[in-house]
Structure formats: structure tokens, C-alpha cells
Image 1: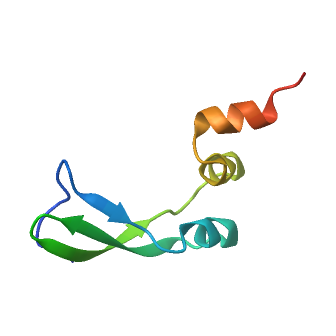
Image 2 (image 1 turned 120 degrees about the vertical axis):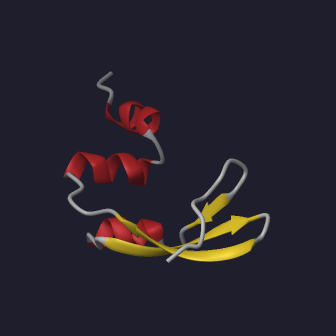
Length: 71
């Protein structure tokens, strides 16, 4: 549990997120890197559709569209 919610300027580091999405994992551990230190959090990524997984794995929606455009 995090003492405070992430704020503007904080970073969220999610090690192994690519493998977690590929493997269909539903919760992942992450770290919030804030001005007052590093805090552990758990993120839920339950119920992703195959398209949503592919968008995440492509990096963002624009990359997804680019990869799936027909010439």
C-alpha cells in the first residue's frame, strides 16, 4: 500500500511489464519514484482484450495503427 498517490513529476517504474502483458498476468508490482522516496505499489491489468495487449506491446496507439496499416 502506498502512503500517498503518485503526483505530477513522479515516475512509475514497472519492471517486466512487457513479459507480464505477453503472459496475461493480471497484477504487477511497480515502484513510484517520488521526491520523498521510492514506494511500492501494485497495478491491476485485468481483463485486457487482445487488441489492448497489442497496443501496449507496440508502445502506444499510434505505433499500433502504423503497424496495422494496409498499404
